[in-house]
Length: 84
Ligand SMILES: [Zn+2]
Image (cartoon, rainbow, N blue to C red):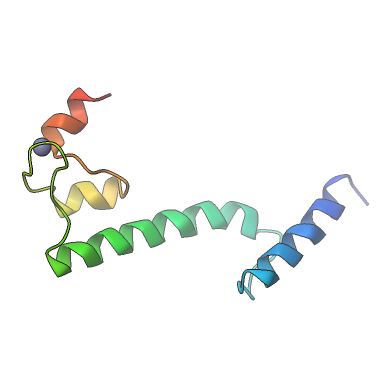
């Protein structure tokens, strides 16, 4: 029994309460990827609605490729480069 075991058990409980039934001790790593993927899907869905894919600064179009690479982005490529 290692120091990580109790933590994993608690993580399983939290996951179950959140409705993520299939979550196991690997969930800690895959959870980050899952969140990221969900954000990307949401961003792409908003593009389909025509309500997003717009730059928050210049109101230009944000490329879907950019949103897939950086789901949280709200800026077009030129401002995204400048802002970092
Ligand atoms: Zn812009």
